[in-house]
Image 1: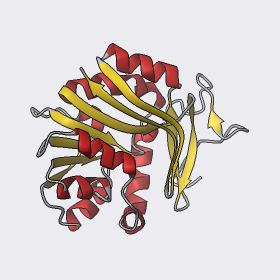
Image 2: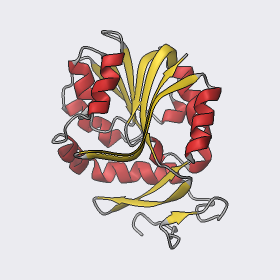
Image 3: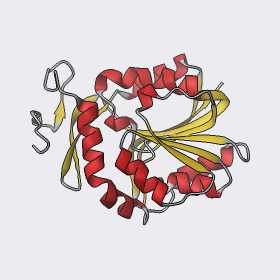
Length: 225
């Protein structure tokens, strides 16, 4: 594996909880380095992608001019760009400085982009909407349970959250542009329980979502009480 890795796949392509495959391995830094490597190719690909109808639904639910956080914003396209053009004040965060550099190059209005790990992000501002497209996958499995308390802390009352997710608990390797990445997910019932605990009401939960270039195992649209 590239980038000095020590990771192997299990036969079904996923690491098993407690298997020790990734013990002592800095998964966050590994993924950050990978996103730096693919940033330019990622930006070129994403610039050609259409906006999902679910992102349009998310935008239609928000108050006009509201503050939106894009978690794992990448190059800012198409989600942050679309939301900014709808008049929202967008903050994008990404752990990859080269991804953020690509986002800044896109000159997206009403938007600012910050190099920051989601788990270190502690703004004074709270948000009317939070979107995370293909972002939670690349958090370490052991940090996945923290995600929903952090979302709740970032959310104003009534905040809408849209995110994509795996549909079973796993941890293993994915590849993009030939580069390996450690991906992970919790099982659905655990995620739904964590959302409820943090005061979110799930408004849409869609398995095997399929919309042209937008194919995802699980999509969740929720609102903070």
